[in-house]
Length: 147
Image (cartoon, rainbow, N blue to C red):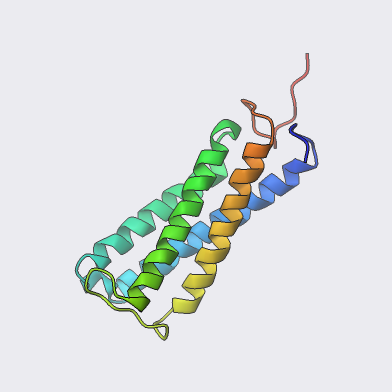
């Protein structure tokens, strides 16, 4: 792939931004729903669900609004949040987490797994795509300035 910001990269960057942001929003929404449905009463886990909601919402907006020069960092942070959330979910099933053991039969377990796996992949791809393209102060979705 070329190290320049070719016009062909623009639609891909936009698509990855939109899908990545949507998956961060979905992850935050799942955690908010579960928190409201009773996870709020679980010590440590309840507050961490709210932290996940806030972090997911902030990173969702950041993925959409980040200028080109910050996109790799923001996308990587989103990918790490998705992967870390998935890791915490799997730990809670396999060995327990903060004294809490989850079940694969829990409400939204499998949707959470898929949202987090795909979200981490999409956001990692966005970060890598940004790193592989030439650094620039402007967004690739903006027309190149001449003159």
